Length: 301
Image (cartoon, rainbow, N blue to C red; front, top):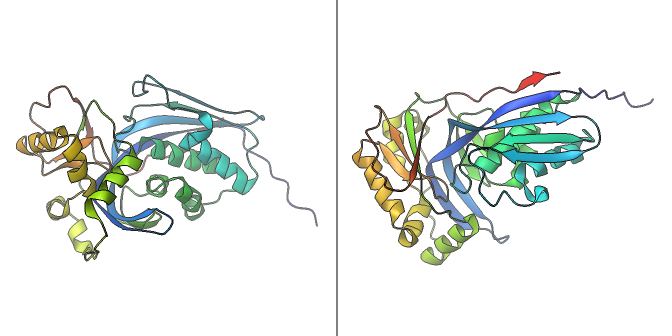
């Protein structure tokens, strides 16, 4: 019997690729492969890139623009996470032959906010929404895992998740009440590989601590604030002291949580009340909100 004919949906998908913050982040033991396991609480925020995916034809392309584009661009197309995500989907499914990706960048690049990972997750979700034979979320997360520790969460339909391992082990949690989030973006970036190297050299042989997190403590902002910690913050602040001073300023303005996101360089503050006038010097500030849901993929002909 011949295989069923696959008829591709030629069309367009648009999705807001939401950024994330880490409400706590612990870097665990280094594996023999050189990769560090992690334990983190991911929270999506409303700040998002705009991602459009079109399928059809044989051309595969990526175009990026927008206010958050660095002056030097984003590097080679073939190394871009969004493009790699599309190629991974096509390799796994045999579809589509061609795709065209357009990204309007609003998430600061190199800030630890998951912008590139969010774009990759958005592309996987968009292609699956357009596909004649959808894979579903579990399989998409499998495709996302090799692309980076943030990509599985930012491919999922979760606004809040506890994650372990390489970010692929996700426990979806009920969304928190929305809060104002102030993102402070310093005038420097922190390369992720260097952040891991600094952390490894600062701690020597890793001595594991207890990793159990009581799930009931993750249901409200006050109890999460008691857990808030980022293992990268001290080693990065030792090289960039403004990270500590920005966090102190956010706390003084009323933030219940004020710390580095991911490996930086962005520092965020969580506010129960509208934040006071900023005083972070030359650093740029972005006001956004924590997200209670993941934005849907929108399809058009």
